[in-house]
Image 1 (tube, rainbow, N blue to C red):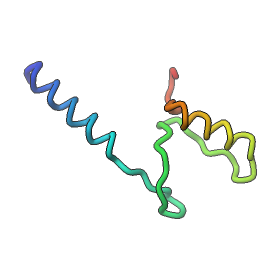
Image 2 (image 1 turned 120 degrees about the vertical axis):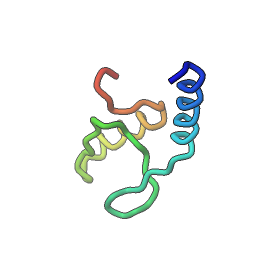
Image 3 (image 1 turned 180 degrees about the vertical axis):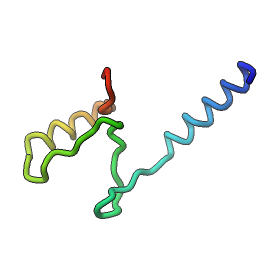
Image 4 (image 1 turned 45 degrees about the vertical axis):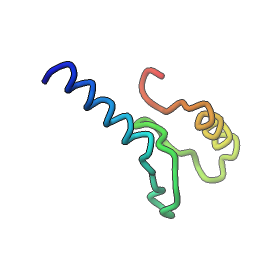
Amino acid sequence: MTRAQQSAQSNEVAAFNRTREYKCPDCGSLAHFMGVDFKAPKKTDIKSWREVQQRIESGKTFTRGT
């Protein structure tokens, strides 16, 4: 694969990810992709959910090394 092809493919993937919608597996409403290492806190753990919200707003995900 040429460098131009790799660049074009990378641009396509980035465009797809910008418009992709994630759905909650429980209720089906829109959700945020939080990374492969995200483990949701208990529904009653309000403090942890606030921290998750802050992470969403900052654009960070739960991925090894971040």
